[in-house]
Structure formats: structure tokens, C-alpha cells
Image (cartoon, rainbow, N blue to C red):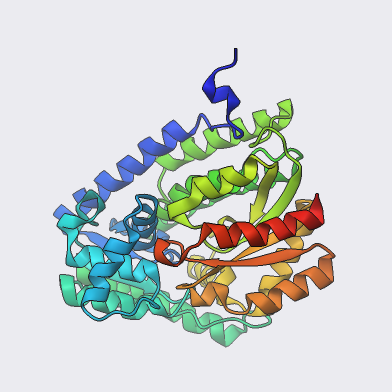
Length: 404
């Protein structure tokens, strides 16, 4: 008789135990930095290598929002922000961040550690600045915006120079706020560690071009956490090497993330953290795997060259969400081709306007160019009040009927 573990439709990653240790360390380091008066909250698209090289600790409210969602307390924590007047239409990461700052004692892990600075970069969305302004009113921490105007058809020289001047202003702000300085050797060392982690992560993603795919969406959404929050540190290198070794072993032995792969789909957008396992494992039971997605592929690019500020300005301006609709369509078509995908699911996240805007147009364009069908489903990443599994199942069922 086979064990219960063997009967599951998905294969658990052995490297998950190391991932838990890494994220526990991240939490402890955030609290230690806060107690020492050197913690900054940063947005997910921020050039974190700069504060890390300057000895400033960092914590990510979006990552905390994912924790709020996964612990299924999104409605309650978001409700704290709504109680003082914030709309349910506001980004649920922002509402979770504001709500937990208002009532940390009622929030998971007693909320995030108190910040001494708030570092926002608008390459992911414009909400972050006002979100951090609200947190600043609660915590007293000053806000600094690293401005990266959106790109269309490349990055002109004047654009890059503007962003580079912003890096200099960022360094000045951190120097004043934390009584520290930026040494080029330390930045170069931090950039090399960041690039190495991103390189290992990218290899793990690209291994999913194999059939069967060694990773499913839920695997990647969890495993991306260290490369988002701890880029530039040495201790995450071991985790990503361990993950890559396990992924390559699966490819070599022909083991897929799910046990009976029949349909390969692309996922677009943030996942529903409150239903991530129920959703993806439910589809896995029907032979559906997601070898690629637009979210986890967003962390790429190496800071290198003689002019590190120039490299930072290029990489952090060219993130997925800082480009126009055409670039998003190009990326989806590229992933569908490279990963040999049969279709795609676009998650229209109610509170993430920047990511979800234009998806109905994108859906038609991607199908026109690739010939594969897609579907748009609606919900939210943290706030389960606006998520209907029954409605989503109905739409995905219609997609699968075209493919199976």
C-alpha cells in the first residue's frame, strides 16, 4: 500500500524545509534591524541592493500581505484600514499593510517590525507612494520615492540619466537617515550576490520548459520569496542552489511537479494567496500544470559593469509592470512558445489595477498571435471576500473543454 504522501497529485519539494528556515531568518533579521534603528520597508520592485550594501535592513509589506492572505485573515486586516475610511477598491496589499500598522497586536506575527524609513519605487504601481504616506502618518517613518517613469519602446538616454540622479538622491537619503555611507566595493559585492541568486533562480524557472514540468505555479510563488526579499545576501545562494539541484534531478528522472501532466498553462498576475494550494492542486488533480507565469519571471537581470548606477537604472526601469501593453503581450507570447504551453489563465486582480489593466485586450492579442486559447478569471490576492472559486472553476472548465 502506498503512503498518503505518495498518493498526492503533486510532489512536495524537499527544499521547502530550507525555504522555511530562510524566511524565518528574514523575519528575525527584520526585527533585529528595527530594534537597532536601521530598518526600511521597501516595495517589491525597489533596488534593494543599495540599502543592503549600506547596512540597512529591509522588510517587504507586499510579502507580509501574502502572509495575511495565506493565513486567511485578509478580510479582517484589510477591514482595519477600511474602518478608518479606506475603500475596498484600494490595493489589498496596501490595506493589509495599513491595517496591520494600525493594529499590529491583532495581526499575524504581531505585524511587521516598525520601520525607520519607507522606501517606495513606482515601477510596480503608483499606489505605493500614498500607501507609504499613510504608514508614515502611523509610524512617523519618513518616505523616500525612487521614481522610475514608465517605458515605451526602450529607455532613452535622458530617461536613464534622470533615474541615475534618483539613485544618488536615494544614497543621500539613506546616508542622512541611517548615518551610513555607500562604498563601491560593498555595492559590487552585494550586486554579485544578487546576480548569482537571480541566475540560479532563472535556471530553475527555465528548467520548467521540460515535459513534465518540474515546478508548478504554487512551487514558484513560494520559492520566489528569498530572491524578492533577500537579494544581495549570501545565505540565499545555498537555498537556490539546493532548489536548482532538486529541479534538475526531477528533469533528469522525468519527474513532474504533478503526477499526471496533461495540460500546460500560463498564469498571468499575482496568485490568490488565500486559496493558492486549493486552486493549483485542485487543477493538478485534473492533470493541469502551470510551467510558467508572468509574476515569478519578473525578478531577473544582473547589476554589473563599470557603472553600477547605470546598470541599476536600466534593470529597475525595465521591470514587467513599468512597460506598456505591447511589452506584456510580447512576454506572454514568448513564454507560451518557449514553454510549449497549451493555453493561459489571466487573473484579473480586483485591487491591482497596474497588473490587471488591459487584460481583456491582451487576451485577444495573445490568442491571435499564438493560436492558443485563454480565459480571464476575477478575484483578489489577499481579500477573499471578492473571490468566488465556483465562478472561476466554471470559466476554467470552459477553457479545459477546448484543450482536452
